[in-house]
Image 1 (cartoon, rainbow, N blue to C red):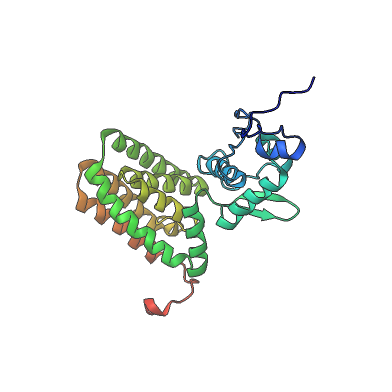
Image 2 (cartoon, rainbow, N blue to C red):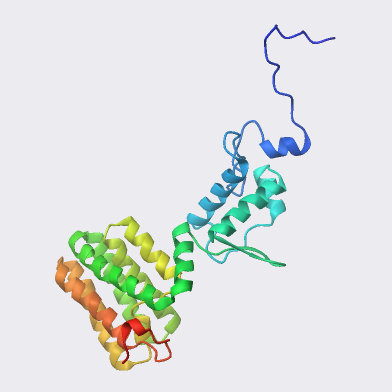
Length: 273
């Protein structure tokens, strides 16, 4: 039977797609795969949609920093797009610094956000000393904000973290102590109630900047002072004492700078000791 002829001036409907073309445009009704990826829509370039989905997996923590990205053929199957589209999306994220391609090994997550990737590049060019100073300034002002804006559950959380930090310090587990120290400092910043400040602080931390308490490890008198200052910081925040919280934060920073290793390169702008 011959199909009826379309009315004059009418545009014929779209031809069914087959093979690579069908894969490139995805199914008519998109749905999420078990991996959490969705078949892209047609109104936005496919590679951009794929890159956005991969970025969402990275920023949400489902793909943490250091994670190996699934092989291309798995992504192609999950997304229902061509291999070229997947490669273009991966290249875009590599260019942004979020992914790292390792020939013969695969592609790995390098940063959790564009901000982190950008700061990591900047720190690589200028060195960690300047990034450490910036992070110290953030901690000082975050401590003041935290004291002004703290809520009862924030104070309770800070005290739990402080107790754990002191317990680990007494136990001698250096790696666990450093993790607990970083967690306490981040909690103080989060208590400030400024999401951008928290993201900036996290990004500097991920750019391999040492915590302000880390450099005092191994020097007993400094370690004892830092324990006291951390306790004073938490109690000042709990009391809503902005100046005291900032003084405690400044003291932590100053002690860590006093403990700065002697093998750091000289910076003529800072003078000589």
